[in-house]
Image (cartoon, rainbow, N blue to C red):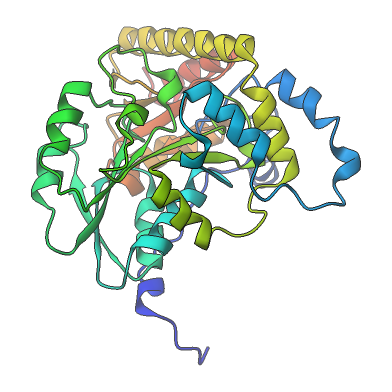
Length: 363
């Protein structure tokens, strides 16, 4: 092509999603495969969300509510924050894109852990800004080093709590100590995509730290615990003046009617959320016990997935599991060439995974 492509765009490594089940079965000729790669809810969507969807199909010829009034006010009621502090997005990565478009200029810097959610890097580069990546320390976010990497060019900083792909959490004490070292003009973005799964009582929930005098943004999603990944809906909690800035760059009607309706209903489905958490926690405990019995190293997690050290080439183990109809995630691209990440599934799926892993590792 003779197009002049911006260097910032050429520097972006495309995001590679988990392989869909249909593609696996088509490519390898396997059947009855299961996907444990993308940290999705194994139960399915909330029944209340499915019921609510039935009420809006006849109105799909109309544009959605551009302000997502019902969802915003339901979240406001549930979280105890003013609706003016809530911005709805097509997944939390939509909010990340709004933040980088609204707040970053070419040459600005954004500090982020590595590895973590790949969209931080992609969105920052898309704004012609520079990602400053800080390696993890013992698989946890190195808060001290992240604060040390702030410079006069730093405009934004990303934290993931719990972190993906390691599952480690940030304690309230460490978070508050960290904030003391962050200049007030630096936007601190705390991605809490997996916060519902946390079992550690010391793990911080950062919504209470959102205030007008400090630019803290909290990201959450309906894709994980609420089982609505296919509808793409998430939200951000932030100071009101920052929310107004994001609305300037937010695409009109960015969240469709089905997503808004399902998410609003899912917030009332307390039984479904409890069932999800109980199943995930029991699954984590089961997989952990089985891995311990096989002397396979794995790491404590506050999310709905486990990071597993397979002790050899992770891409090869991933491929062998694929051929048994099991889709997990190799961590080679995240800088962990001997690790895989596995999402907790249904009990029978968890058993099938550990049985297959035992087989491919020849234990």
